[in-house]
Image (tube, rainbow, N blue to C red; front, side, top):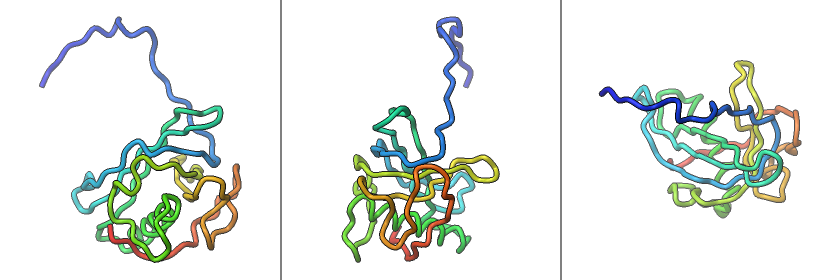
Length: 155
């Protein structure tokens, strides 16, 4: 469908600065369950906003598969979802199985950039903690060690 607009109304072009690798306190703006673009799986989409520091207001996005044909992709996602469950306060032995358990929560996210220069979430943790239980300490810059958490998820 075609449309028109007056591009001269914009005062300036909006640019987004890359969020430096590090650990950020975030608020979950939105959490939803969606089908993958390829239609071959289901994922949890999490939209977060940085709530402290110089980059307050910056956005961080995460997608975690819950159903997919790749067992490796599901294992990686389960590790991150287990960390997320801990960060939002799901009791040990409990299950993260509803987006309402995540939306509106505050916790910390450690990000880095991979070899393709794409943003990766390395770890989720509760505010005031350096890392989830059983994890190596999360450092504010660098320290790009992968997660060691394991388990599966109901999502």
